[in-house]
Length: 291
Image (tube, rainbow, N blue to C red; front, side, top):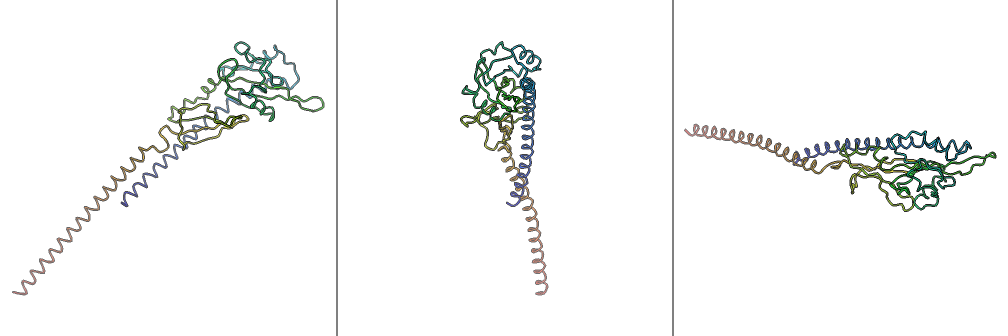
């Protein structure tokens, strides 16, 4: 029993060590994905700054000027589906117009799906990533809101509107390479809370039900927090590991018990043989004395 307990303790420590290594690997994989998400969003923020600065400078932003500026912005991967201007929250300019004209005239401060994100961006004056939404022009996309405030000659700041980027959601998810997690044998779920209802909104997942002991890592994005659940596909400590631990401990304890039994039996036989020799010697001595 003692050898079984010792062997089981040693095996369990090995399993715990492997579990720590897996958790370290899971954290690394999750944080690598988070870094890719932030790098992409930082790139889009830099793009928005170009248009925002032009507006803040007081330059005219008519349709031709906006189109010329937007056309020069690099967008090789095509993740940014459209650039939009929304003075007072109403979308008046879109580039490219083809395929996106359905969004013209949309009031992002009044439309029920977008107004919470738009209002938060306006109140805080910070970049805000909202969505994903069902886009008016079709498909699924997120909106990166950049509120623009202009300062007049007296130094007073007033809300001008938004510079918006429509992000193709499917391409964005593909671009952050979630496939690498599956290839490394990890299950994942990316989610956040809906600003209106407080319900969970799942952005991407590899399986329906994630175990309760999955790691959750926070990902701070513009004016929001995403949560990243990750766990190895077979769990941190698969049941098969513990079954093997019990089997190995039992076999080890059985071997130890067998060795001790053989040693004890040998010593017992030796003591019996010595006792028989002493008895025979005593009998011979008594016989001699009697003679």
